[in-house]
Length: 166
Image (cartoon, rainbow, N blue to C red):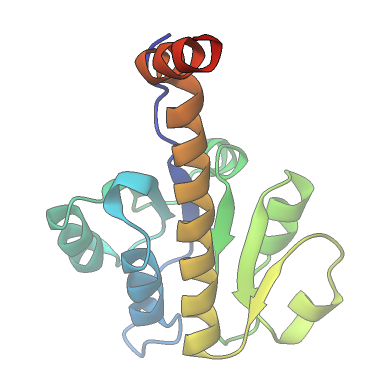
């Protein structure tokens, strides 16, 4: 047995940024920073994220960035994501419907039609609630990776087996 690859959470943002900050991109960046770079793949489709993603990349985060919308790439990215992150408090994001349809859990603002959608969602209204979600995701992925390591560590298994039967 060899060591299992660690789980990377895959979190997608679908949407461009605006100069007025309506998408709360600073919340998204802080959300990502609550998850260790070794545990996260950030996927973004939408223009305007260059500076923020360059900073995260310099901190060791894995980034997949597509400035222009392409439906085929969008669907591929979304279907292969664990979560869709929406931090804007504007009208809501139709991408949440796509996420739910493909079994991807949206992390979305508790407002507008997000509250009327069926399916699993992680809702937040405040910065602190969003950070609690990120901390919870980090805790979950740490447990998964610890279990993977334990289950795939042949040397430790052999020692436990030997000690048990001596």
